Amino acid sequence: MIKVTDTYPKHDVFQAIADPTRREILKLLSDKEMPVTIITSYFSMSRTAVSKHLHVLEDAGLVRERKVGRETRYLLQPEPLLELKQWLSYYEKFWDTKLAALKSFVEEKN
Image 1: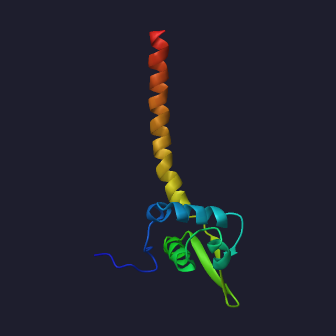
Image 2 (image 1 turned 30 degrees about the vertical axis):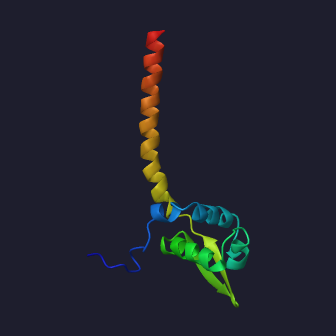
Image 3 (image 1 turned 90 degrees about the vertical axis):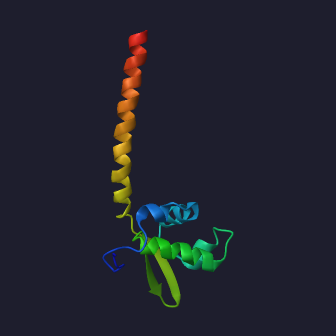
């Protein structure tokens, strides 16, 4: 059994971005660091619910929190998204190949 430690994230990137709310939070944080109170204002849910989403993102390494006085601010950490990009690139190649084969097939029929 694998023990969850600092070297293994509690949530993987795919699990973290599976939720539309978390994807929207990442989009909000792509421009600038934001406190949880401002992030919460973009959603029709409680601050506690937004904080839970932020913790999933943090556990996956996608956001980092820092304290500024009594305020907790969140900042996007995009590096883990490279794993997603690499995974998707395989499927881009797959579809490019399939579409090229379809194009050849259609052009041969004409």
